[in-house]
Image (spheres, rainbow, N blue to C red):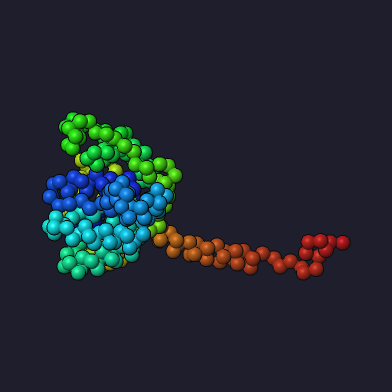
Length: 292
Ligand code: AMP
């Protein structure tokens, strides 16, 4: 299966991509991880990407696209892949479409992770990565414990490090960039009919279950399709259906509204009759302020 995970920084894409990759035997391809590795190795790509990553901006599209093109050509990606953190804007999404069309391997599903902003900030502040195996933990919500407390690379306890860009200032910028550049991808993929949206808050296992359900379920409807379905359902509703309490209430109110003008007309007629019955006043002297 070829899957894209979309979501803000801290929405848990990396954690879920890692689990999904293990359970499905397909690689997790994280552009953030690839870029960080390039920075650590000091490659030309890493040197070019470093400044943008430190400020929370996006790395140049051409650099990221070159890196993705190479990674997708690796033999392990032929059986499928999970893209985590890519695409990040509409240019990258269109380029990915073109690249996958060339390879004859279109995307099967795009899953949007929804998490409230204050929860994102809380998660990012507790996030730590093992410097040896790269596994991500959260010291606030899911610290290393049990079998997961031992690093599979070293056999010792994980060496937990905080990412340089997980600081308050950079996080604010990353969230702003996400809202402005990445969020529009939701509509891009919804229109293609392959978007699924999940609530990514709560325990990791619960989110994993929602993700698994979303991957087997139907894609999210476009707003237009949802409107069409709603009005079709309205048309299909039988006219003879027994009136509901709400409908009876509406009917009674509208009858009362219709009755109001009738009551007003009666009042007007009564007033006219009274005036006709009253003795005529003389014009002069009868008016206020003209008495001598
Ligand atoms: P991440 O680990 O996905 O949060 O990414 C960390 C940083 O790497 C981002 O803030 C960007 O600077 C850079 N980055 C990761 N993926 C991309 C991408 N697809 N396009 C541009 N920059 C990216």
